[in-house]
Image 1 (cartoon, rainbow, N blue to C red):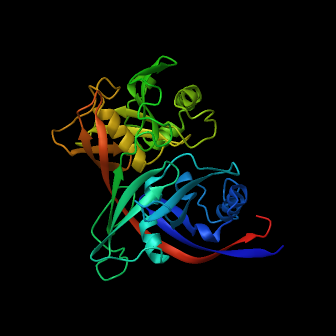
Image 2 (cartoon, rainbow, N blue to C red):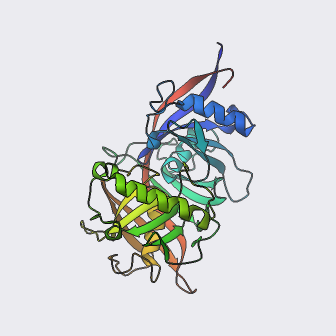
Image 3 (cartoon, rainbow, N blue to C red):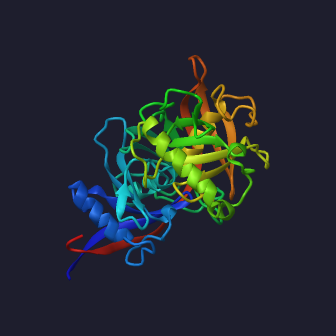
Length: 358
């Protein structure tokens, strides 16, 4: 069987890892493109015949091209390869993989550096929203060495500042996709938020857990997982997501009082396994729930004064700091911009091989 070579780069973006491609190097037909990505990443649970790491966090891809919009530099499509299911999901965004899009754009020659810092505006095709990335380019090239540290990643690296602009309704069409601040399903109160990522926020105590359990403990709690799936399947259509069986969204997040000086503590299922951390845009949606009057986070969140408002979202492997620039003039607070710190690193570049039939 003959094979064909496809240029690629692999980056660690935030606490995830993915394959990055120029759109021009992949088929223009969506179905054919998806088959190439499945072959590149690996189709079975072990992903033994591809470059994926048999984990949702390492089974991701970014497809990048020069933007067709006047207000952006590059277009970025995020693709989640669903491990072991032989299919992909382009419904959600991914803020971790986004952190590598700017470095990839520079390395691939799509964007030139512009001084000590280079700003790249990224149009996120999954949602139609824009994020500005601030990259460190002190010597006329992308640098990956620096002092910035993020939980879930060993060592330090150059900072990548991600400024998300008005990302409400990225996948569901509106900030509160059910139209309510509080919904009740299967006897559980929840706040469904889409401020960059569809997230169902619930109190840990209402699901008979403390909220400080390890991911391993929660992944072994079959009764909890069954109940979360029941809620997920019922809430999906209410959030304008349709049948979410097997889909990457919505994320299911259980919150409790912070224990490490943060604003809130989280345990998040993405989608069926408890994550060691919390996703970038998932953290933004949880932080947004914390500022919504009468949400399930009220009475649990520890907030400080300020605008932009600084919130530390605790998770099993540390914390995620989010800065929210908020407009309080309307009926509900509106997040004008969300700022986050990530890091990224180029791991490898070259050619990967897939069979000619995909």
